Length: 428
Image (cartoon, rainbow, N blue to C red):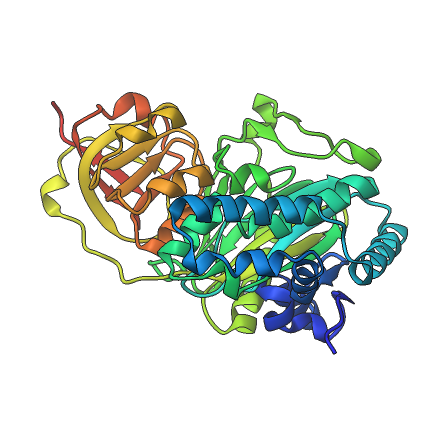
């Protein structure tokens, strides 16, 4: 019998087929001795029980024979049912008991993260496609977050992504990972391998959402294969995300002085790179991690497979053209007509084969990734969600390129080296 709620420390929690790869990998990291936050998992079976209890399974069974209009109505009915129908008692009682126990142990606001069975796998990371909710203080908002994560499996964004990977949402399920929110001094990500054979760590002040959503340019620390620091690039960390609850550090603008400071010392970079290599060993392939550091030390928040492809040699004809540097997503080389976008409302201007040049590197840009030849952004870094999606699709991307939308003329021919982190264009 599958337990609907299990502690993250239990052996059962490492079962990806029941608790999803995100939760299972987090449990496995803890079992391997890496520092992770406390927490528990809500099984994918709970999602299935909720569907069955509220007759939503019968609604889903209508989808294969529905036309496009009917399918949209059915999907809306499923989503609204997951938000509005009563939660089955066999789910609600152990879930609230586990929540109360975790609050009692940590005295910190909670985080609810999706852990879909199709998530964080090689070839389909779903980076930024589902939901995570931070700083949940009371029971009502906690239960709303649980419902929203279930419903996220049927969101337009997730359905579009699943469609490009031939995944049927009715054949999968949503588990959840619940943990305390880390009162982070700094947070970031890491790539255990780069095209040059080294490693990359990114960091910003506060919580890592600013990196994941492509809102700032993080610090970037390069290391060689032996773990020796080879480069340090201080980012443009204009603001930090925090939490106002339980005396935690709140969100705030970052002073110019603090923005220039490194988020990690050399010793901390070396320590974190060791955890990154341990995570790579644990999953048996190149790894991408998310981490946070509080006053006690590092916590590894997530590990997933890192999408890697062979390096493409750039065209030497571009060697003498003007260019800018930024943070490489780590894959590919491409060229095309620059389509400079300053607002999401302009995304309809992007045509097949264009090089998208924009400011914020948010996951919402994922809708145009299938049609573009490359992407250049003014914000974001190598470990943002958009960079993960670009690697997955083999799309060259350079992030954190200062004043790219002002310097690159709209309509000009642009070349993007996603490995070296260089953008060049033809002068008009």
